[in-house]
Length: 622
Image 1 (cartoon, rainbow, N blue to C red):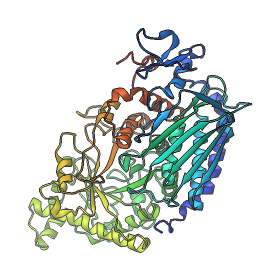
Image 2 (image 1 turned 90 degrees about the vertical axis):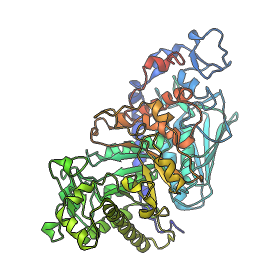
Image 3 (image 1 turned 60 degrees about the vertical axis):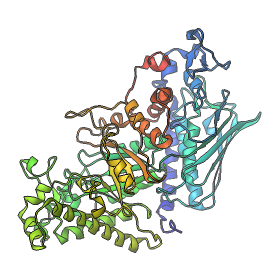
Image 4 (image 1 turned 180 degrees about the horizontal axis):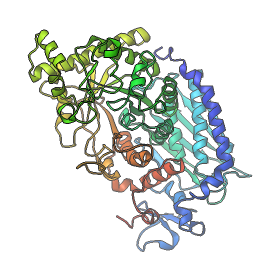
């Protein structure tokens, strides 16, 4: 069994259960208070005294504002959010389901979330425990939908049965995340049936089920009485890159990012945890990295912090992919080599004027001719391998290598000549590719020793760069081992040319999915519609384009602006990667506005995307 050695998951389940139980109790006590100021659009509009209708064009309209000539369904709803649950084929579900089946009833059942009962059918103890924790998270999210008081003296009973076929907790690109969700209501109870191959598909089904629920203007919650939904993601890699090296991000904000990702069915947090600016991650084998590289002793991530984040993410259906960037973007944290007798492991370190030595200050680039550097890097990789799940791979960086740095370093120039290199660009590219190949060999050796049950060597990820130029990439980077994460603009031919050569890609379209843009230099801000409309390239085979990532580089963002900079725009990319819709952002907008309201209810400070009046008056701000 590939996952049999990963017993760390079972160890954390009981601890997570206790924490979640405390969380649920706190929500029960404070639900009315916390929601009193956050009743949202319906209460703001005085909708307690109004009724709402759904038009044949999927627009929810207050009873007194019906448009002449527009046809409306006969059903009457108590609020706009109630109407939105089932107005349109996909109601309020985000991201849009992809299966042939998606039917949602206009009728409602009122219920008390504390009276929902769960039954788990799973082939193993680990999968069973995972689903029980998923149930607790689901109830926690339901409580956040309460407008006033969630408690009902008489409540329709909600019986949820979740069945998974596979006991494995492996989460990687081949993992089956599909699910089927059926809701039916009788005179005595509402029955919810979830069927999935893996726990991750079941987790997504619970997320969809939460999208079929909203708060009632009186007590309790409202849920659709019947629904039939089948769903699976279009792409297996649906990610957010979070840079916590340029500006340190406290763990609380990384966890909130994971919570919002779970609400969006995103499944990869690409953790850009180290860079030239700082090295906050504890490496137990090489404590000097953090000691010399962190901004301060209070701005660090311990090994236990990293382990806890991996567990927190996994319970939400999310992988944490750690990036150890190199050979560029490696400075602070590497400066202790000479004092330890290991020589210059990084060169051009903090040099000025910086434009002569790097693309961004502070400068620093690993020394590809220093064997001690490779030994230290291997120990870093070993720590990373122990923190992640056995099936997890590594992002090796590889972008923005500044060849003049190496060419202006006597130690490297002399070493290259001694090894028979000239100082041509091709020689430097060869040296650069050897750096990646040597690190790949180290990564293979680590995994063979730590996880002998995994027979297939893991592919690693690197950024597109000068080295991935289609003219000569095949001479430097074997397509069987290197996945390329491209960060070019949408009109660039790189994606198409790499796909033609058989490379696998992860796409981060620079002029749509770089969420830091618009706040520095000549970059432009990309609104949610631009993010949503950015298409995915098509490979020669189905699995050649693994998926994509939106990127939050942190030069100009810290914990105070992080959430509003990422959300809800990352959710627009989430629908692109889950559904790959052929329809436009225009048709998705009303579901998107409701999605943002759910993020707000869950404590995510998602930015405004339109005047609130336009949310309340659907179809009038086109």
